[in-house]
Image (tube, rainbow, N blue to C red; front, side):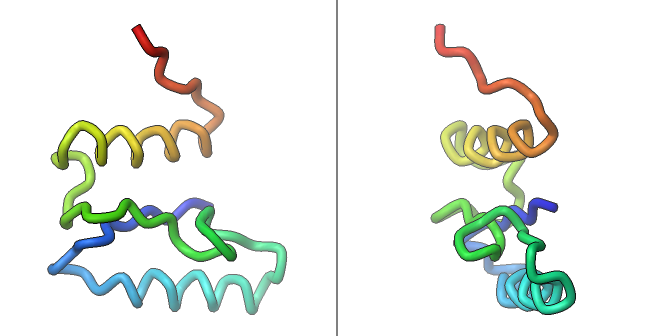
Length: 77
C-alpha cells in the first residue's frame, strides 16, 4: 500500500495518515505505507491536492504512484 500526503496540507491533518500507517504496521509488522519507516510518503511543501500542484510536486507524487503500480519512470527528453 502507498499513502501519499501533501506536506503543507492545511485542509487534511496528515497525522491521521500517520496514525493509519502506524495501526497497519501494528496489525501486520511487515506492512508499509511506502514512506520512511513505513509511514506515508510526504510531498514536501505541497498543499492539499497533489494533482493540481506545481509540476515538480505533481511529478513526485505520480512517480511514486507509478512505481508502486509497476509503471515506468518518466523518460527525460
